[in-house]
Each structure stands twice: as C-alpha cells, then as structure tokens.
Image 1: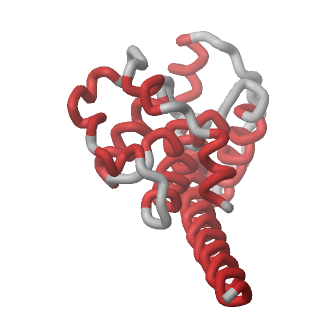
Image 2: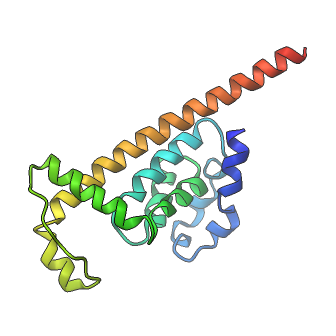
Length: 170
C-alpha cells in the first residue's frame, strides 16, 4: 500500500534524468537502486528529502539528488520531498527554525523584516543567521528521523497486513 501511494506522487525517472540541473550527475543517475522503491530505499529517501527541505539554499533538488546518490536511496522520492519547502510553507518553516535556534543558542529573538535583497542577507547573517541555521539543521535532523521511522514502520505494517491477508485466504 505505501508503495502505490508514494509512486503516485513521485516524479518520473526520465523527467529527472533529463532535468537541466541534474544532468551534471551523468551516468551516476543510471544506477538501478536510485529508481527502485522498496523497504530500504523509501525510508532513506524520506530522511534525505526531509532533511534537505530544511536547508535554506537554492537548488535543493540538486543537493537531494546528490545525497540520494551517496546514500543509494530512491532519488525521485528524495527530490520530490524537498518541494515541501515552497513559497507558501517557507515563511512558517524558517520562522520556526529561527525561533528554535534562538532558544538553543540562548539568543533573545530579534525583530526583523525580511527583504529580498543581497544587502539584507549580508546585514542579517551575523545577527539572525546563527540561530536560523542551527534551527534549520536541528529541525532537518528531527524531521528526517521522524520521516525515516514513520515510513519504515508503515512499510513493515503494510507487509504484515499482506501476510495476514494471505494466510487468511489459504
């Protein structure tokens, strides 16, 4: 069951192999394990994708693809999960990351108004940057662990239900 649900939302292999930013991986994208969805590759892909979704950088898909190659997990799933970070969710996610990072580093939260400019980023790196990055890394690790454990558990539960159903029909 989880496999069918996950496959519905995954991008197609050919779409990703031909993506202009992912072509740099060349023949590494031809490894079969990167395109297989099974009980080992799915939880790891969830961990990779959810972790990268919290990394505040452009081209998260490229980082997710690189980590999927390194961890030999399902590349389409890892890449698709970074889309959790989008213009609608990003302000909430990154504000939560900043607040958590400020709490961890014992920094009093500072008032700020985001501006989409390089000048604002340079000026803010030293003030809100450290708590923001710490919060992003911690939340990325937490969500990666939760995603990994949740998918691993759901996959095992699904297999147990199949076996139970099979035994009942025998």
